Length: 117
Image (cartoon, rainbow, N blue to C red):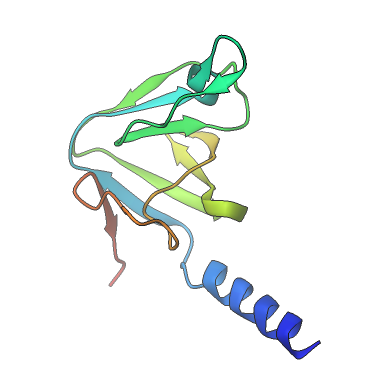
């Protein structure tokens, strides 16, 4: 029982350490694509491309590009490394947000988290 309570406390604290909303600047052009582009004919999946974001919900959503030095806001942290972002007054749920804790490669050379002062 103690282990479960500790795990729950750790999980909540990891998710709440972010002061939402968080502004993120891209240091190069970033493509945002529906996750359906990862599907290979025959049912397999290909790996995600570094520096590309994938829309998890709304798989038929239109792809777009966030241009170099533009920003977007992370408005919610989702389970398993996902998040919700807001870009140009539209919200998107991403299946993978590499700047979050738990990723080996935070892609900090592409996604610059702007810290509020």
